[in-house]
Structures are given as C-alpha cells and as structure tokens.
Length: 414
Image (cartoon, rainbow, N blue to C red):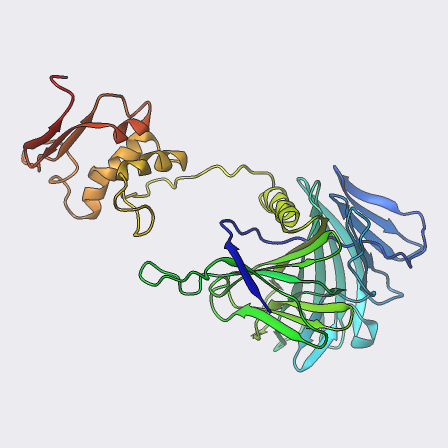
C-alpha cells in the first residue's frame, strides 16, 4: 500500500556508495589517485579497485582473471548494501542480454585508466565484447566530501550494423526496505490543478511482488527519476540524469530487493561512440534528509565542479515584466517581481526597462507605451526613493498618472 506525503519543493537527484565485501581478504592496496577524502586504490594481489569518498566505499573486481563485479557497497556507518558479488549493469546486443564484464559472455578485460579533473576522480574500466567487436567502458566518478558515485557506460562501434538496446544505468540487489519516490508534474498546469504533482510517496513490497516506475515521454512528467530505499538507520538513493523516457523496476524476494534503473525499451544502431545514461547513487547513515544532502553535495561539487549557483543573464536577451498565472496572487502587488529579477541577474535599470520600454516592444507598442515622451500615453508612476540603489522602492508608489489624469499623489510638489 502506498501513501502520499506533503509535496517536496526541491528535488534532488541521487547518489550511491559502493564498498568492499567482508569476504575479500585484507591485502595492501596502493593509492593511485586522491583528492581530499576521495581516493582510488588498487590491490593488485586481490585484483580489486576501491573508490572511497565521503565515508562511503565501492569495491570492484577488475582483473583479467575474473569476471567484473561489484564486491561491496558500504556506508560510513559500516552498513553493507550489497548482498552478493555481481555486475552492476548489463549490455543488450541484438537479442542477447549480457552481464557486463563476464568472460563467458565474450567480454575481455582491457585495463583501467584513472582521470583527475579538478576535484573529480574518475575510474574507467575498459572491456571488449569480442563476439560483437564492441568496445565498452564502465565509468565511475567520485568527489571529496560526498558519499556518492556517478556511473555510466560508453560504447564504441568496431563493426558495422550493430544494434544495442535498453541502455541500463545500474542494476543492484539491495537489502529489502521501503521504497520512496517522487511523483512528477502529472499534467498539472495553469488550468488543470493536480494535487498529486511532486508528492513524496512510498511502498513496501510483499515477498514475490514486483513494482515499476518510469516515463514514456519527458523524464519528470509522471515520476521524477529518483528513488530511495530505507535500511536500518541508513538510506540508499539513486537518481538518473536523463530528460527522456526511462524505466525503474523492483522485484522483492524474502530478504532482498532487486533493482534495475535505465532507459525505457529502445534500440539504436551504433554509428559513433555514445554514452549511456548517467546515474548518481549512494548510501548514507540517516534517512531521506541525509540522502538528499549527500546528493546535493555531489551535484554542486562533482557535476558543477564547485561553480557557484550564480544567476546568469544571457547577453541581449529580452525580458518582459510580469508573471504567469499562479506565480503570485493577482491581489498582490506586481512590484514584488522587481527584487526577484535583480536577485536572479538583472541590473535595476534592466528590470525597470523590462517593465516599461522592453515590455512595450514585445507588445509592438514601442514609442506609445513604456516611455515618457511627446505623443506617448501619459501612464506614469513615481516613487520618493532611488530604485537604482534599492529596486524595492518601486513597491512604494507615491504618484500615479493614467492617461494624463492624476489618480494618486502623495509626493506633493516633489
């Protein structure tokens, strides 16, 4: 049974951490790259690579003598979120669905490269699918301070007329727990009210039950491509960075929750190198609040590379003052939009022009509206303060003239 909670105002899309399995023997690993608490280490004897950041650890089996697998996903609390060693994605070529990096499926391990870009560390695990002459690389990125992992798969054509389908971002088996997700727009519009839009929902699957979410068109039209799973004082979360159709499937066994997250059924003829969908996933002590904070940290540091969220105004872009229906109540003063325009990048004079001559030009009323000039409509307001120093002064209107007639004058002879 699912229940709805209060709508969320901000959606933060998703992170995951992978860590070493206890079954792996403890051997000395060599740190290959580091940045703050983000570390990539290689244990040659064990044939493993470990990525650690923000207290979370992801351990991968990457060696020519064994199949590729995620060996462990561990939170900073020590909670383990993997139930067995297995590949965390698949490749679908023609009618075949192949576990990524498995030798019996025709994969040959080519090697690992490490990239360091700013504060981001990236591991690239290269394989060749010899049966299809296909180059496939699994990528993982981490940044200091965020217990998150960004993963995706890239494909390079080495033979003509090769078709790949249903591109997968991540497939994992997790300990069973309550699933949380966020509804999408669901047709909500100015003239169609939908109280279920952007609402947090949850569901606990019974043993043997399956559950699916997704989108057939725009990614967030029905459901936002994000989910979280409750653990014992820990939270797993994942988000898909994709704007189109996607698919998320769950299947519950007695103690496990199998999950597959990627694109909706599709196929493409591989004519040039392509990237599959990116997923950010992770696990943190706590609950939903902690998981969204961890995701936000990765977005700001990993994806935006620590660039501040400074509002930008594109050069030579027209802005017309006013808000769509529903932006504010029509009974409230429209002047409250001025400080928002300035807050998000406009200069005070640009905001004033957007409400006067700029809006007139967009209405094909240049020279008649929005200006104080001979022959123009005499529609004028005045304030006592200087709006170029404080644009909020425009909300303190002391003089109003409409069509040459004065309707308000609290400024006297000033």
